[in-house]
Length: 141
Image (tube, rainbow, N blue to C red; front, side, top):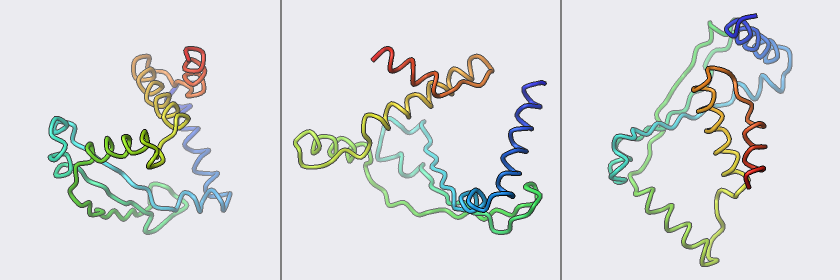
């Protein structure tokens, strides 16, 4: 079976699971957020907010045919701020014992594993299991 056929099969299975299981359908119907940041402005963090967008997408009208769904997307307003300065200040406060870190080591490692798996998959053109990458990180640790 080709990779494309396997992907279509997995998508079809996911769609069917959504239709057959109420808890999956309920989770699927919840809002999805998308955060976009134009990295060409990365050298000036004050400019990143001007070029940042957060959108909320929800299924406005569902259908047994996933291609017939109607999505509703709205822009979520973001107040301008220097997010890089805020991150550094929060980290410094955590070091001083005045705050808790928002993302712990386990979450940070999981994020790194997802990114490494995506990069490896892009290089090889094959799916990469995140568990594989996590095992490599733990071995190197």
